Length: 81
Ligand SMILES: [Zn+2]
View 1 (cartoon, rainbow, N blue to C red):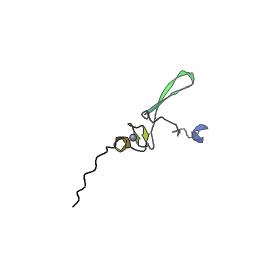
View 2: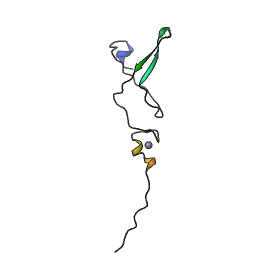
View 3: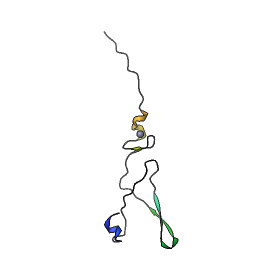
View 4: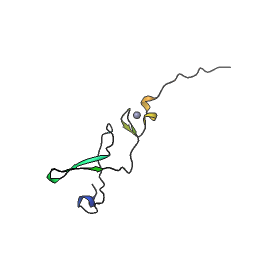
């Protein structure tokens, strides 16, 4: 959490760094439990999201680029002339 948010200044928005498992979808809202038992859903905007491969559950590439889906093909026989 940035310092302005921690000290409750400039509360138009908050920037938080959170760790999320690669095996779940990024949430579009988070639910806050408020004092007094109230709950509120807060929409989440992402400035940037990494490429995520749902097949191998790794960041940095998509399913189409996944090294686990590479198809090995036999080389064409060479012709000697
Ligand atoms: Zn992959």
